Image (cartoon, rainbow, N blue to C red; front, side, top):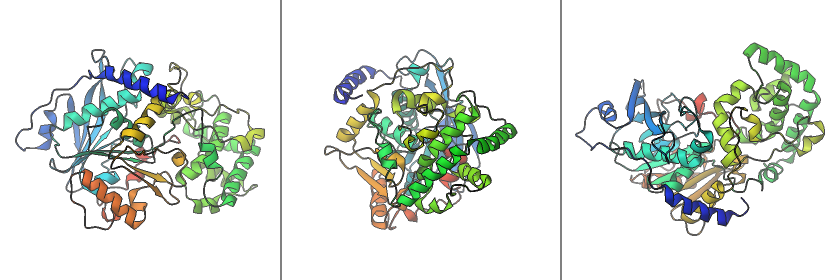
Length: 472
């Protein structure tokens, strides 16, 4: 990974060999009719059901037949879950992915609200049940294979939705949207990644330096470190409470090794997790050392449950941890200030969270430098949104001098939920106008993204299936 320029050149040459993607046959656009009937005519697409949707929309659960391996399309297929929030075939369409499982609820991402368009939401391959059988993790679960999934879905649905397309996602979904454009740059008119980390050189970590200075209040950082030490010093007391909850909820810890190890990992991660999802104002809720055990336990339930690394919580996210271990990279564990209290130092890394039945694979030191190089040199029509205090913003995507019509915004004091609507009014208005322009729409007379209501829908981040369990 250190020889990133040479690696990128190798990857680009290799990519030229992969032009033979299996492409679906597309039906010609017929006369306007019922959208459900039109969807049924798309080769490979199955309408599973139509569900209740807010007024003015229709909501469909779909599956799409994908090759298990796009480089060898004759080696089997699998059904990938999708949902479609349909408004009008003439409206812009937003391709959304969380990078994890797909939600069953009709929701609108912020770009979908801004353009008042349709939204296709896609489940990332290997998240159950969108998994080939038999599974070949090493060949089938890569960022290129996932980008090829997205490419085929967009191309298939363009037979119906012929207006401009955008791509978006948050966190791992933002990374996914970026990788999609790197490999298939002409599929959409613009990409809006939210809080998307860019771990270019995995061994060269910048996260710990960021965490040592995050926020503008040293007292807050000190309080968070103090509560971590307090928890580990009272490991027996908290462990007994965690053991009782695990017994009541049926949690087991075979993958990680023990409940005690889960507790230690969770305490280590709590500092990162606090800045990821809480705000600096929440520092007032941090228990002081010696607080009642119930208060301390409740704090961890809010920030980072001590049962976080149970088998039941890890298993659904095994594909994420696998990709972090082989391509995406992961932050170094921020544990130096706790070293004298740790029983398992150095084990807070992705392979610890992957079931032993999944074959191990060497890390790909080319994948992320290749993405980074492409973004810096060719990433046209990108709009990145980051949060100032979000640890995943420590290593953002960089826009180089050769990029065109691309932007990067930071929400002041923002966390991992940062959005265009949280920007200062002038910046929010400019970002909103950019998204609408890419969608082929006139600039809105409204002053900012705040004007785009989500009436009839639950809050996008309130959907539990859109709340990510891993740190990323």
